Image (cartoon, rainbow, N blue to C red; front, side, top):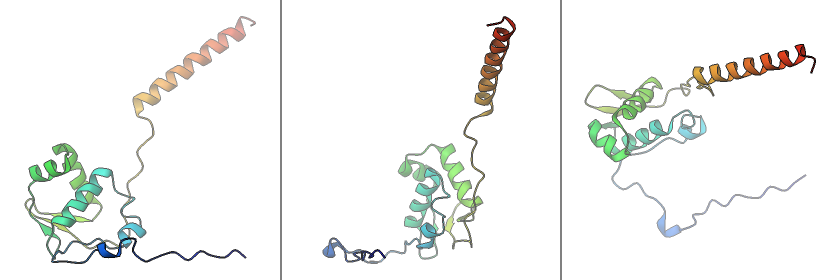
Amino acid sequence: MTQRTKIQRTPILPDRVRKIDGGFAFIPHRFLRDGFYASLTTDEAALYLLLVLAGDRNGVSFYHYDSLCSLLQMLPDDYVEARNGLIDRDLLAFDGTRFQIVSLPERPVLRAPAPLLSGSELGGIRRSLQHALREGSQEDDDGR
């Protein structure tokens, strides 16, 4: 039987332990543990974190999209895609003016994985294979 090493849970810098000091921002541990974080795109995760930090005790914030895009260094189309992704994943409510980070749903809402290759890339591969097969069959017909 192998002996387990006890994990050190004492702070590395005890004089720098974080404290709740007048803010309301928090992310529940199950956001990581239950796969919510892993289900987000990079832009969705960045927007979610910023809105968590900006929210009041009810998770409500009033940031305008141009401020969010500037802070996140994100193009408006990417911001809209990230915002809509968070709404679709049931992590964010938005009424056109206000955002609300809402309590986590029971499970993460997962998207179907994106195809590894686009249709045009697959078409190019298909044509290359067909061409190679035709050349191979011509060589067989020639007796090579």
